[in-house]
Length: 61
Length: 139
Image 1 (tube, each protein chain N blue to C red):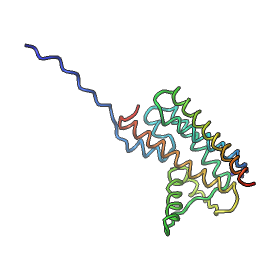
Image 2 (cartoon, chains in turn green, red; image 1 turned 60 degrees about the vertical axis):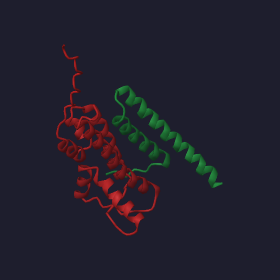
Image 3 (cartoon, each protein chain N blue to C red; image 1 turned 60 degrees about the horizontal axis):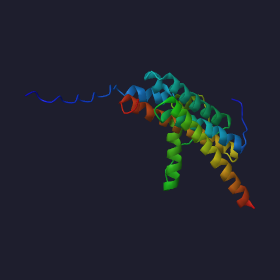
């Protein structure tokens, strides 16, 4: 099994992507609603990721 | 005088036994959806859980062993073990093939450990959804 080195950002975005796909699949009633919900979850994940990243960057001084 | 027409009673949703659906969903991520003739959703759950699990292995994440002690230790280690175990056959195969990564310092290992647990937790979400479809609560 090859070893993989990911940055914090890459690992977090991949986590957000797969989580959003499953959250989209298990919720809502129609495929278009599922797609929209999955995209919205992914956008929220990335927004939280960038926001918390900046918060830690600024808080670190 | 004729009686007023009564409303037809709501037909119950057709249900089926959920045991094989939840069982297969645990063993093979997304398997419950395939049994329920929803291959698209099954394939998406399978691809997500499998990708997350393989990424966790490639990042050399550690598998949790259940430990008890204070409440925090119990929650982390027993919860982590349940999360790992929820990946079903992926977890069993990994253990049977001798994967034994010690818990090491470093953000990549740490992400790997979390990816392994999160893969199982996503599979639990898929199992619960398949269960709800099987009992007729969802379509």
